[in-house]
Length: 160
Image (tube, rainbow, N blue to C red; front, top):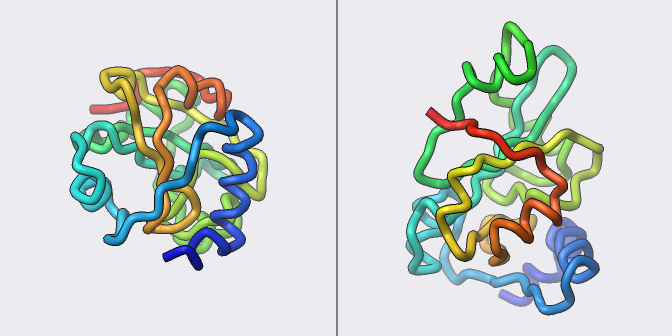
């Protein structure tokens, strides 16, 4: 399992995490956390405390939405917010190119390209939330206010 910590995407996320707060650590899970339900089961927490990092595309622009694991991202709300006619989930190859992560391990930090981040206010229900750290078996726990500061994400109601 420690070999996961040596993977480049995980190291990238860990570096940013440690620069933000040396007390924050990456947790390596025995079982995959590829989905919010998988992560919640592995961590023994509420699925809503899992941060889904969803890359969305509008034209040639991308944004990352951090959504509570028990909610669905509202494309209609996002369209209104961004004043866009068409928004869709990014293709897996775009996710890899833009973020540097593969789906199932997309971290809210350490992206290869600068992208706008939005965080759903539903995550503030939990004292601690868990986000991917560059690999389906790697996560980190953080408070909602700290996650907002770490990501510099704009807060909004993004779910349906």
